[in-house]
Length: 580
Image (cartoon, rainbow, N blue to C red; front, side):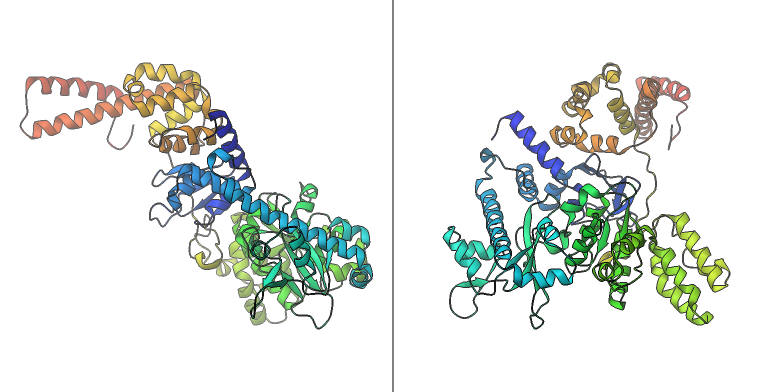
């Protein structure tokens, strides 16, 4: 094992490089509310979600069963793997080097080898684009893409042969198994050997959110080539539902007032960037996934949606809206003045028209409701509203949702109360896409125990720990509570995730609940109140125990004397069962 400082530094690097929302989201359907994400707890049965994830502090906590911890804790509980195994697994996924002492040599080397194969393939494609510019020039010119933008996105060309790439990789010492694992060759069905996956195609390199090459998309250059787009297969590095094309280029341009612009295709991204809309990203020819929506949610609270204007594009946009709304994002719709997609709009109407269309974006549901204005009969308008209704239901903000219902009522000349039927209880309910659509998220504030509130206050005021230990000496004698409080006094809780991972397992639920509490800070006075409440609870439990002894016939003078003393203290505490 590495030394303790080296291990802590490595664990911290892995934690920072890992998105806890993404990891938890593999098992739990999560919905953002405020700064937390909520879902049904995977560790106990429940109908009302009480499981929360805090992406800022990289923690999770269930207010129902009190399970809590970091991303490592969660993955250990879900998979049964050891702490070190899950840290190593996440390190490899995030591209954080695994110390040899941990045993990461073989698996980490395998991932590095695949990335090297992809980089060599990329060099091959770029080199052949330079050699065969005449073969790709027409396709790029038809899209209004100059050489500068082709270079900016590192576009390449796969030559029209069966094994040019494979021969180059062989010369570099790459085996057929390695090339196949990287997804750049295909094994022959008849006979032995492999051949190049892409031939006579314009090649788009695909990178993950960290800018690492994970795969390719190949666009056909002949009309008779099928399919038109051919992506890398699913590999250890490439999962098309977990990548957004152009994200690594767009991230610097995304910020307040300039949310991500989600389009449908590779050429659309390049066209938008060439027009000055460098915040554009795209899915990889598939429907938007929850993972991709969470990638966008990490960049801000809003996203602009610009899909094709045909029926298929409008249907895809509606599906994307539901997924994006489920991730807590506000979604705007961009309507093009010309052309069926951003690429065609730019070529037909010019860059300025495309930029202005994005500037004129409208809230997605508001744009859909506005289309009801031009519909003739009341029956047709009502039918159209029923098609839009799921979009209204998915709007995260209840005030905004009510506003849309009132707008629809005005357009339809109906009483708003009629349209709101079925929306009762919608506040606090959140749309969830896919097979878990029935898992509607309702969240409500949960008051933690007095102990957890005390710990939460001590985290904010570690100077109060000696006072607590003086009044509760049994805590100091307890190995779990002693370690918990001493670590708070030492300031370790200032880094919540690292603190939780270092605590004994028995202490983690208390610490996690304390960290999850976001109540007011009462300072030293609150500590005094909590200590008084804990003493009152202890007296009440002792009084109950003595009463039970009397019911069993144990009416000794010592028991009666202690009951009288406790009764007096309870009166002073003004304790009643069920509260303090």
